[in-house]
Amino acid sequence: QVQLVESGGGLVQAGGSLRLSCAASGGTFSRYAMGWFRQAPGKEREFVAGVSGSGIVTYYADSVKGRFTISRDNARNTVYLQMNSLKPEDTAVYYCKPVLGRTAISGNWGQGTQVTVSS
Image (tube, rainbow, N blue to C red; front, side, top):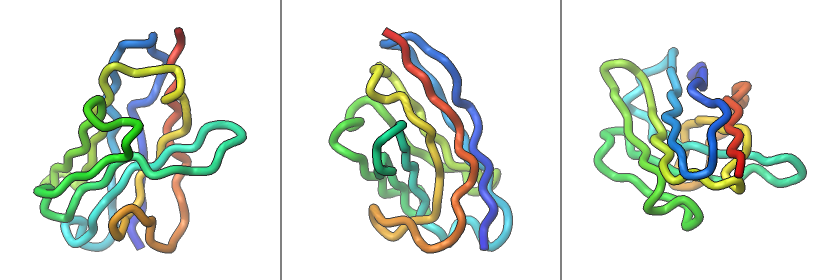
């Protein structure tokens, strides 16, 4: 039932950084564990990072571990993804979604935000 709006994507050179934001409305935000997913052209959507409802527990796909940091501000109903040391293979549309572990719960996906990393 939550509505999600992703923002913060853009074009960046390899090695650069971006911070994505996901603003949520509807429901009680802090009750949901949240995750970031991404989908590149011709590839399946994949899990990137997750954070518990409290923000205490975080977990990551191996491909981004050590480079990306997920966090949340429940007072602002917002989830963040700090992306450092970006690589061209990080190029994708990034989405946020409530999750159970690494699995998105049922419901519609938002429009996402495009991240493009050039070499």
